[in-house]
Every structure is written in structure tokens, then in C-alpha cells.
Image (cartoon, rainbow, N blue to C red; front, side, top):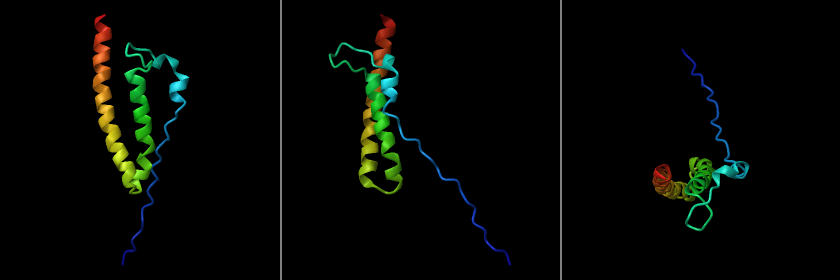
Length: 93
């Protein structure tokens, strides 16, 4: 007769995004011509940080967090496209 042993799996730790990241690197906060003073890249980093905050609650089954992650991914995809366009424009100049 064999006894079944449970294998202890390590817990997955997800680091919390640091909001100070944007403050520590002022070179990322470049001004662009739209007048807001906020680059698309900086906005993308903020969206990624917000999505990161909702990952753990979504694992626990929180439906609101899952929806916020979905919306954040949609917004991030659009911002990535805009960042690529902005990068191509600046490389041509």
C-alpha cells in the first residue's frame, strides 16, 4: 500500500508595481506637442502599473478586477500602437 504524499508547491509572489518608478526616472516624462505634457510612453507605464494591481484580486475570483485587467489590456494595446507611431515620427526627424 502506497501512501500519497502531497507535494508542497511554492507560492507565486507577484511584485506590486512601484508608483515611484515614474518619479525616479524623469527622462521618461517627455513633453509632446499635444499640450498635456504627458508622453504616450509614460501613460503606457501607468496603465501597466494599474493592470498589475488587479492581477492578484483576479486570481481570487474578483470579477471587477478581471474586467479592469481586460480594459487595461485594451488601452495598453492602443497606447503601444501610438508609441510606435510616435517613435517612427521622431526617428524621421
